[in-house]
Length: 320
Image 1: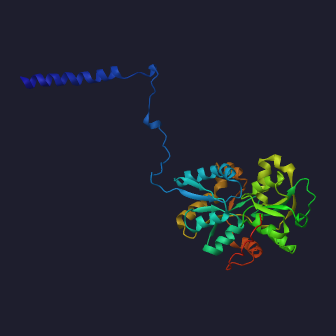
Image 2 (image 1 turned 180 degrees about the vertical axis):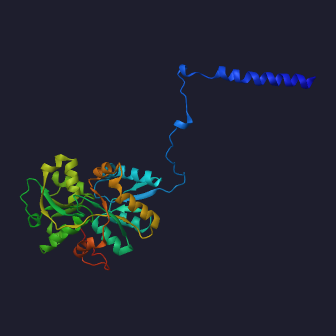
Image 3 (image 1 turned 60 degrees about the vertical axis):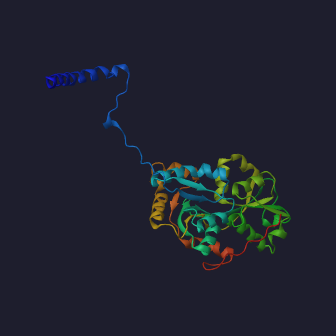
């Protein structure tokens, strides 16, 4: 008897459940959104919480704030393609960036020409790729002065105030020093005073604002800066241009994993073909990234006083 009654209740419950569910279900007319699983788009993969960021050092060729503005789109692209965070690392001097790469504290770096020459000799820094600008992989050192200066060459800056960019900057330190030595002098006696600006755009501003009577700057930075800050152009002028030298490259340390090096190379060299590539390259002021041979830096080696096996010529102590 109890079994029959229980079965009756169970049958009644089974009959009522579908009706209750139908009454509780909101209709589309009530404005409740309907989710269809087959319409869902796949979300991008999320990196594991413990993934190690790719650490990229950017030498202070331009000021830190400008570096962040210029390189952030590229680093976001690399992070998306590699499915790992990308961390920008900046230091005040070029040598500090070389030290980070030597010690394996960064994976890849954007360095200046003489920093590559020094790093290659000191610990086997390796070329990854080079930026191409105007169809070429060379750049120049520009000797700049205030727009109203009567100076026409380095000889006219004797006894003046000169701004160097960094102690191992090729265009902002090594080449201007070679011009002074060509006049039979040394910077600490040739100029009345010198100082470091630690970026090329800051050296340009120092000349524009009358803090320095002259400076040596990277031609690529000069062109980029006057395009971004048109007010600079009427305040300064170029009075001398160096011969062409190998362009500041993208480099890696000798201990990088071959697979990571290959991935980074493919992403950089193939960037111009990516849908977002042209916008990223435009932000950097570049055409594209291309392969480059170590021999492209031989002329810079000659000017620093050595060949591939030698140590770097010591930099002069600058008077202040």
